[in-house]
Length: 100
Image (cartoon, rainbow, N blue to C red; front, side):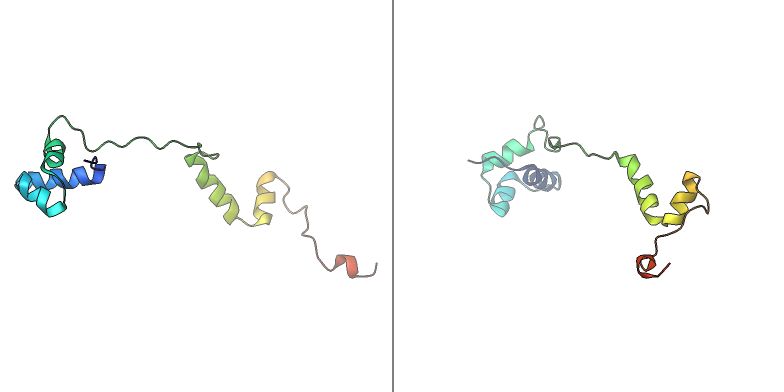
């Protein structure tokens, strides 16, 4: 007898709360009666999920808004925020080909 997944236990509990008998739930879903009985017990906690393990994010969630706004700005605006004002010029790709 395999254990029911969290979602399957939730389905069993909701059907039992609606008034279906354990025998009916077992037949309808293809579970054994003992699986249904175990899922309906009060001491079985069916909703918690284990925390996902894995690598923590490199960027905190509250930092994403700053990155999104920075990407959306023009390069000129970024320089202005740094205090350069109009003292910069974009590189012209044709400059190296024009005679001086």
